[in-house]
Length: 145
Image (cartoon, rainbow, N blue to C red; front, side, top):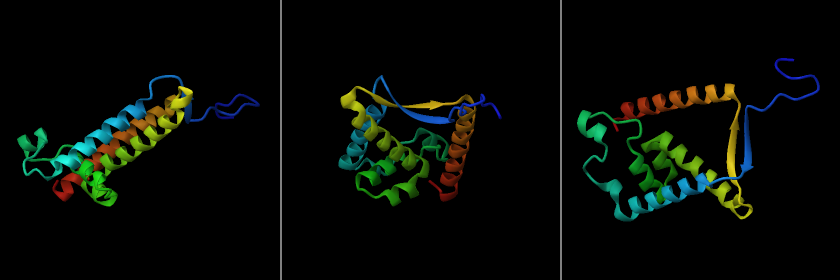
């Protein structure tokens, strides 16, 4: 039965729920939208000096290098250009946008999107996150960000 009680389905590894609490996705989405707007309007992605202290001190990109340029590309609705700048930052921006939209839809019911994660899934997700950051950083090094 592999962990299931007779007659009962095993609990899912991941489950989206509408829960009480602060709509963090909406908050993060609003912050991201304001940030992308500021980058786009002020053209902060066009500056010729590095905004990244890691790159300024070492000459090597940090794992999030290119995120300001991602915000500028997304402000211009250039998703492909944003993805080339920093794939992981672009995917994170889209994930936050979906999360924000879900929280906005749940707001009238005073609910927010929540994610319930089984302990084993939590371990897998943590490992996947570390692998994604390392692969993204390798990409940034390879393309010379």
